[in-house]
Image (tube, rainbow, N blue to C red; front, side, top):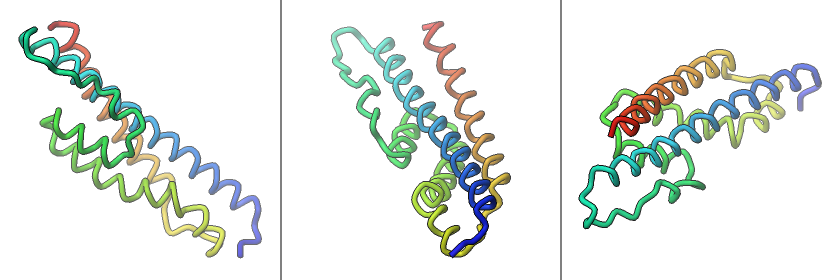
Amino acid sequence: MMDNKIEYQLYSKSVSDLLLIYQMIEDSLKLYIEYSCKLVKIHLPKNLPFNFTGKEYENAALGALIKAFSKFSYNDALIEELKNLQTKRNFIAHRALVDFMENGESKDDMSELKGTAWLTFTKVQAELSILDKRIRNA
């Protein structure tokens, strides 16, 4: 069991910060899916029903969001990056604090994980921005 409360508090703060970035990625993917559905609907003939809004993914987990995103994006590198991020995200969300309490230390470099997650978030945001422009010009 861990004795150093300050070290745990710092680690806990890092985990919280990282989870916030992961949540921002998930929210951006949800928006991307929603915007993609809007763009499809704009380009389809009016007599062809398309009843997807993207809201179907409102409560979806990251894995389902990545799978849906991959149906609307040609950015294979980003899709692969998101898939790689998912494993680490799941560990951080479900095991990181417990493991830290049990071992008294972390095997993960939180600053590196935050940097990687933030970079992925900016890439998803860039894709979202491109899609938003396409919708505005449709």
